Image (cartoon, rainbow, N blue to C red; front, side, top):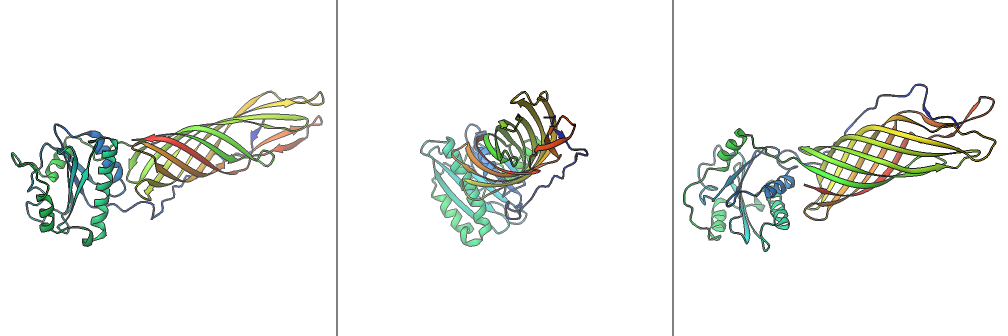
Length: 363
C-alpha cells in the first residue's frame, strides 16, 4: 500500500462563513448603567454573573460601586436627559438583594427583592443575575410589566432602608468615571469543555471517534471565538492483502454566535477551519504483499456547527453539538500492484457529518 496523498491539485483555500440567525440574539439595547451597592467593596463575581446574564440584551454597559444607596437617587433629577436604563442593586442587607431599574426613556420602574438565605454565594449571584435579566426583558415588554414613579416609590419605602449619611453619585456619573479609569464594561468570558465526538469517515470504515478539549473565549455581543484540539482514536482498515491503521490529530478555530433560549439553555451557530495531521501504518498479512513504511501528511478542513448548551449550576455546563466537516484535499489510500498500477481502496468522505457531547466549566 502506498502512502496517502492529498490529490494532484489540492485545494488550499477554504471559505469561512458564520451563520447569524436573526432569532439567535437580541438586538442591542439602550445605554445601561449598573450601580452595585455593597460594603466594604463590590464582589467581582456578582458583576461577572450579571454581565453574563445580560450579554445579549445590553451592549453599552457602565459599572459603578457604591457603599450606600441614596434613596432619592433613582427618583431625583429631571426625566429629560436620562435616556438610559439605570440599575441599583443593593446587597448590603445581607439576607436579601434589593434591585431597582429606572427606564429613563419612559420614566417607568422595575422593583424586585431577592431573598438570599445563604448570603451572596454562587446560587445567590445566579439568582440576582437572572432577576436583572428579567427586569431588562420587562421594560422591553411594555408598561404593563413595569411601575410608574409613585408605585415604585411606595415599593422602595417598604424596604425600611437605613437613612443615608450623604448623597451618592448617580450611576451615570460613576459609570463615566469608571470608563475614564479604564474599567471594562463586560468581563472576559471563558469556557473550557472536554468532549467526545463521532463522525462519518469512509465507506469501508463508516465512523471514527475522537476526544478533545475546546475553549470558547472573549465576547463581542453575541459573538465569541472558539478553539479546539482533538485526537482521533486509532481505526483499522482490514484490507487484503494489506491493512492499514489510521490516526489523526486536529486543531480548529473559528467564531460562534450564541443566543439564550431560556434561563438555563443557550443555542450556538458557528463556523471555523483548521488543520489535521494524519498518520498511517500499513500492515501486510502474508508474504504476497509488501507494506509501505509508516507515514504522515497534513490537510486543511472546514467546519460548520450548531449546538445547544444547558447550565447545570453556577459554572458547570453540558452541550450537544452537530457539525459538518469539509475535507479540503482529495485524500485517498491506494494499493499498488507489482506492475506499477494503483487501485484506490479507501477514500474518506469529503463531507463528514458528526456529533459531539461535552461537559465543561464557564465563568
